[in-house]
Image 1: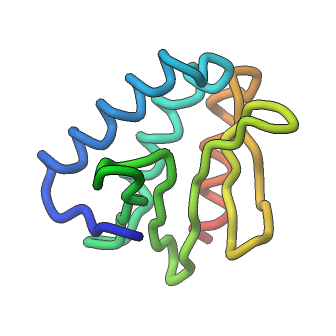
Image 2 (image 1 turned 180 degrees about the horizontal axis):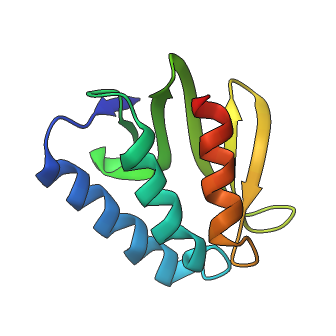
Length: 114
């Protein structure tokens, strides 16, 4: 289930949770998170950020946003290799992990915003 983020407080709570969960089981993507999250905030259309609600009603590691009229989701995947996938529906547009340079993440967002 998706829940729309309607306030800066909600966004901060979700971001805090992402980092806590990354410490627990997603160390191979944690270094990419600051740039990814910054680009999400920079490029998301107003009121378009939604997060997946998981077990017990808690936010999970998936986010949807609209960029240039197009809904894109970002989802943490553990297998085959730990990564964060950017998806358009079921199509993987890009994958990010600790080896992804900040400039590559920024270029990806620029390309989908064009």
